[in-house]
Length: 119
Image (tube, rainbow, N blue to C red; front, side, top):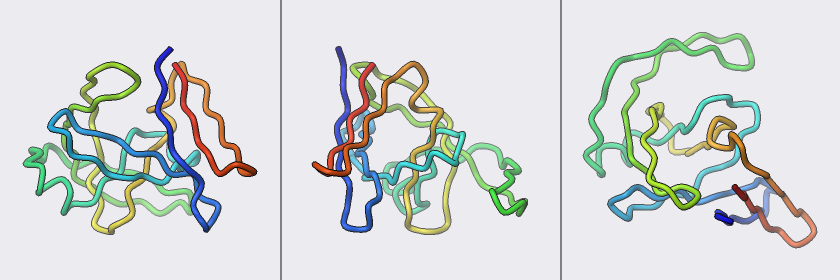
């Protein structure tokens, strides 16, 4: 059974760390309203030499439509190396979306301030 563990921060936000295959890590807020994979800050993308690909049009929850750059990145995730398309964010708020939780069990324990994703 493979697991990823995280925590609940002082703002009661679930946070989980994701790790590139090059060992670089970033803490991401869990966003159940985001049905994609990851929104990572441009600075992190550039520091890790991820290649920017095509631009995509996204629609936010407030019906705002905007364009974002994408990149492909390889991550260590739930005991495997996976390649996913990520969205490049212009703000410094990394997000992990529900597409990363396909076929998993997500547990957020607010009492003990823990997050656990199990495959």
